[in-house]
Length: 54
Picture 1 (cartoon, rainbow, N blue to C red):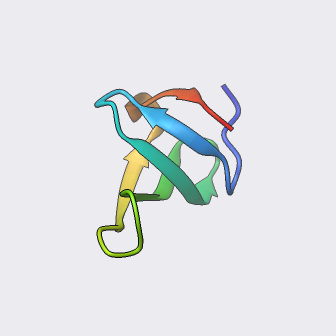
Picture 2: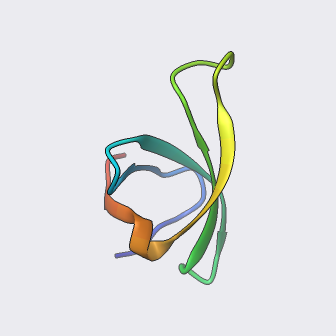
C-alpha cells in the first residue's frame, strides 16, 4: 500500500487521519479529529493503517 502526504486514511482503530508527513512509506505524522477544536497530531506506522480513503 502506497501512502502519500495529504492522503486520508482509515486507521485500524476506526479513526480517519490526514497524513501530514510520510517517511519511507513506513512512519507517518497524521492529524486525527473531526474539527480544528479536537484535532490531534499523532505518529503512526504503516501497520496502523487499514486503507487509503482519499
